[in-house]
Image (cartoon, rainbow, N blue to C red):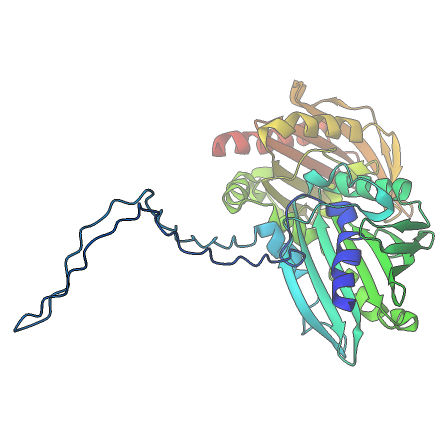
Amino acid sequence: MYRTAIRLSIALIFLGVIVACSGPSRRDATPVVVESPAPIVPTAPRIVETPVMPTVATVEPTATVIPTQIPMSTPTPRATPTPTPEVPPSAIESALLAMLPSDNTLPTGWELISANTLRGRPTGSLLCGIDPFPGAAKKLGAVESEYQRVDAPSLSVIQELTAYRDPDAVAAMDWARESLTCSNWTDSDGSRIELSPFEEADIGDEALVADFTVVVDASGRLHGRWYLIRRGGIIAQVATVSDVKAAIDESPDVVGMAVELLDPQRLAAATIDPAVQSSLVGMMLHADDIGPGWLKRASGPNPDPAFAAFCGIPLFGEAGEPLGDSFAVFEQADTGWMVRQRLVALPSNEVQSAMDGAAQALTCGEWTDADGVIYTLEQPQPALGAADGVIVRFQADRDGEVRFGAISVTQIGAIMNAVVVTAPEPPSPDIVLAIIQRATDDIHGAG
């Protein structure tokens, strides 16, 4: 009873809320027993013949020859079933699987029962009888796992990770707050779910938590706690379940470990095409391109945090996942000048959205970032006199230390080129434009 109730009442009802889709999952699917059909016996007219006794040869026996009758139907050969090849995990699924607690990282006393990709789920009613999250089809991938307390087999933790683009993950959390409002509900199989009000929790970027009880039958009850947690574009759903209510408080260590392993940067890297990434690296500025005395201080395949957002919103708005994303940081030590560059390759149908997002992100006038740096921005101007780019001059005040600079975002084909120039004093517009022009020329030259 316990295992069945967990699988159906918890995994389907609770965890299916965000990632619900059609088709059976590996864990939830119930195998169907197929019996071998009886052999097909041809039907022929009844024929009465005079029996012919077999003839015995002197060397070896020869069977009696009986006239072959034409059957009324011909047996159809049974097809040999073709095994379904197992599809290996995608890059995103592999990244999610790597974020699941394993036997090596689980707290003492816990063991891993299963960890699989999640590509389907039986259809059925969900928590509170609601429809699934409308944006569920936008998910990039999903995985599931189950853990069990060794000394208390009735205590289990079930986890699902679903990857979205950041805006879709935020929308999923907003939808959950608005939709999951019931206090009790009866599932289609007759199980009654009693649910406490959802509470906000200081876990990840944002989280909701609720306690629940599943009344399976007159004598069977399951108790649990459900967590809905977002970190970046990752939605983690975690359900702790036991038939002993007090045992639910013994699982926070597993939940904490599960949240600690969530890594949005690993997810971002999984969306990158290595060939595209290599091409972007070849298009980046070199220190010699900027001028004498310049050194490259940092570079990498993931976005520089300085480009993650501007004016508190993503620099490229709601553009889709990049095909490639590379950054570099240059410094001229004796002058205090710095140049940061980020190149992002996007699907062609996402480029205009990215350019519109950049133009919008640079219009706030004043903004304070997470480190307390206060930015004062001038009005955006066309970059290099082109309609497909913007440049904004700004000053940044960090505890009274002011730096001056400019940020430029230009679109070159399917590539977004962002360049930030900063200096202890207002930089010459001619020098700033020369650096931006050289970055643009390098991209055109590499293409």
